[in-house]
Image 1 (tube, one colour):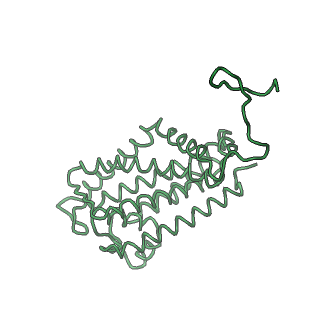
Image 2 (cartoon, one colour; image 1 turned 120 degrees about the vertical axis):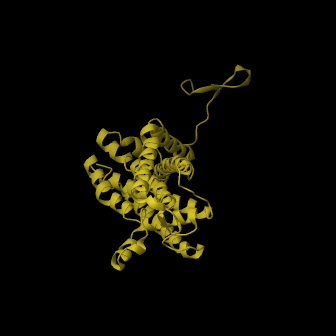
Image 3 (cartoon, helix red, strand yellow; image 1 turned 60 degrees about the vertical axis):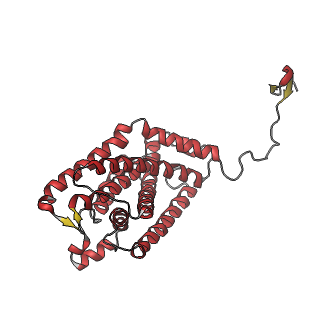
Length: 289
């Protein structure tokens, strides 16, 4: 008993420290402390360089608004009954959110592979679902912070007049869009073996999908074949649904019922992609040697 650790209690008496019986689990069902620690660690990682991760994307997106409104918004041009600046602002906000959600989650495992620190994600007593929730939660947090910064800048921009007729659509489509790109980023970081692979996904998949999603135009102006292609793009529903929350109208429709189908579809798509991420994590796909 001399080697057994002791702890001090009232009266300065030393009593043996009680340990759980061998084989008895200490963490039950959900490792809340581990999940919270991973989430905070990932949030602090991008907060430490917030000039690059939050403010720089906000400024870049605001510059896009300036350029497109100067180039295309002259002579009082209106789209869907509002000024061009007001029409394009919601799409730019949620596009900035999605791009940053992807950037955050696509960095995790890839940086670990490149720097040899991936063991920091694989060794802690976290289940696959806890690991995924921590990483996706941090990516969505970054997206929300970028979105808030952008929304504040857009509301101050001359010519942009945004209301909030459908708050549920703003919240739902912002979260669903950010989660979708966060899941895609996590898949990308699992698959990629070098930063060039990740850049290829960004340039040849994410960028075309976001830029050709109706952010700067209504798809009614397209030929029927291209309208059909646009409706197969899930980011189109994110952009249009988010715009509906601010303007009360969108390419999808001008009623809650019309937009609700897109909202449900995005929820189902996130569930499917999230399940794929979970199964690949459980198999340790491209993570374990």
